[in-house]
Amino acid sequence: MYKLTRRAKIYLLLILLPFIITSISGIYAYSQSKNSIVLIKIDGMINPAISDYIRFALEKAKESSANALVIEMDTPGGLLSSTKDIVKMILNSEVPVVVYIHPSGSSATSAGVFITLSAHVAAMNEGTSIGAAHPVSIGQRGNDKKKDTEEENDDSEKDDKDIMNEKIENYAASFIESIAEKRGRNVQWAIDAVRNSASITSTEALEKNVIDIISPSLNDLLTRIDGRKIKVNEKEIILTTKDASIHNIEMSAKQKLINVLSTPDIALLLISLGSLGLLLEFYNPGLIFPGVAGAICLMLGFVSFQILPFNYGGVVLLLIAVGLLIAEIYVTSFGLLATGGIISFIFGALLLFDTPESDIRVGFGVVISAASAIALFFFFIVYSLIKVRKHRFYTGYEGMIGEIGEVLNTVDGVVKIFVQGEYWNAKSDEIVNKGDKVEIINVMSNMKLRVKKHKEE
Image (cartoon, rainbow, N blue to C red; front, top):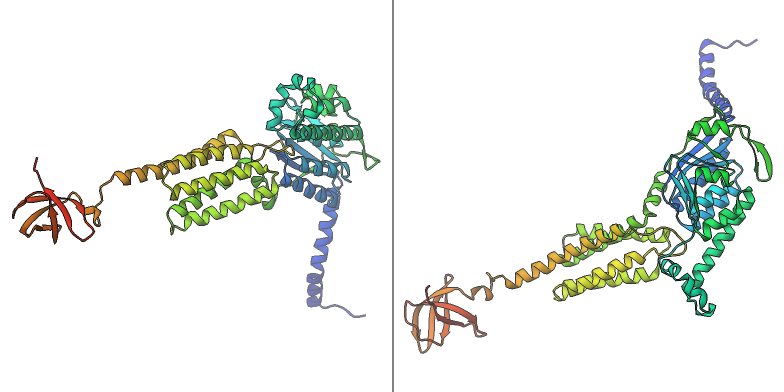
């Protein structure tokens, strides 16, 4: 029988070592995945980055055979399109999804209501709230105040925006109704949250069958839902979450970037900084840095426009604002064009993301800050121009006006004077003699100076 040498045994062990390590790791991972959950945290607006974040987490939970995906959430709302994608993913998920409104002081507003109701298990911490899912636009706010008056008018008198708002509201109501029916939750309250912006505390939510449980911490939640029977794709399963290992998944760099660009305030600041950089480059060509930085900011701003639904009226007003501000650089209007541009900028910024498809708006403080920065820039330009017009010239022909020279001689009405180290021919309406001091009052087209006798004070 062939006997392996000591060296051959070592070589064989080195060859098999990677396979042994892989097998042990797989066995360990399998044992761990038998009682594990995946945890993600959402703190902010619902947008495409959040939708992609949840999709990635569901895939990882499925790959690792996790017992559940827990979404800790605190959101003021967000895009309707992203909300629809998230709800669709949760309703069709093969992994149980637990939505936990946490920590205390958090809320699930607007889009957050849809996501919470769609979860297999909906939970809230003490001191949290849920509701106010009515789709709102700026034009609708004023119309709500005149609701009684509008009811007296004929339906044909409603304008297009009223009809659009009504369609969005009806769609949102039917959408949330279907979600509540699917999960066996309070359908009437869900509809009321959309149509009347109903909002309730965690205690009321539990009493009204809006959520399943109130829990003060994640560990307590996992312990209390352990053994709960739920339906996942029409299959009844029992949750095993007690003492489960928690695998926290963070947002990727790409998702974080999209999340930042999906903020209306950031989008407006990028557009503002980009415009300001280009304006500065127009005003003083050759600086390069303002132009390059402005172009980059504008490109990032346009990326934000691809992510966020925007109002074309707001975009037009912003373009008008930029046109007026550029015109101010080349046309001396003493600030009138710049003032019109700043006013157009403010209205454009406020209307930029005013659409029925989202609950997100540009903060008024951000609009005023951006407009103030542009206003200060053009105030400096106008101030500099006025100062230059009043300032005395020191170079060229204009710089000679007001200078004092000395008469050298007078021949046939032509006065020869010495000024600024040069000899000049001059003309005077007064009689001047050799040695007199004269003041230059004009430079004539024939290279002659017009002078007058200087009177010393």
